[in-house]
Length: 156
Ligand code: INI
Image (cartoon, rainbow, N blue to C red):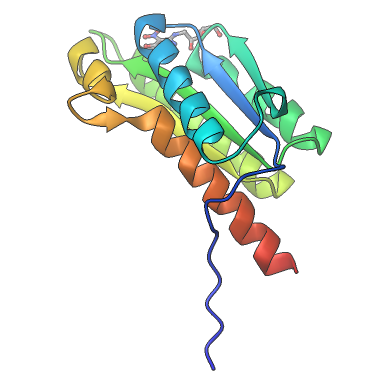
């Protein structure tokens, strides 16, 4: 008999932390609303969700690390919007933030999902923050629930 391990989407009794960057807040506020909506609709109580606001995407990893190390959360959700300008700034911020988030997940053993948009324009970002192409904040929260439950099942 093959043992298939996967996470369910029942999140009642679980605690989540969300780190959101304020930069491009028109977009990130919508990602945040999508993530909270997803958590609540999967059974998480509002008092079991902490939101930390940071200035920009580059600043997300420090707070995600502190929250992961606290042992308080079943999973973390990182939300932001890095939008390409005319300089290579975008590439440096996106690379450092992505690498940072990945390292936290692997070193702390806590699921940290990636809901940071990296787009060419504000329009592309808005399309992915509740307009034409869904809401990546909602998706990142659902992934966080699945990852947390999969980890729990694996460790049982
Ligand atoms: N931060 C973002 O979240 N998105 C961006 O598009 C962005 N741009 O383009 O500069 C951005 N910059 C700020 C950066 O994340 C840090 O907050 C800042 O460098 C201070 O550490």
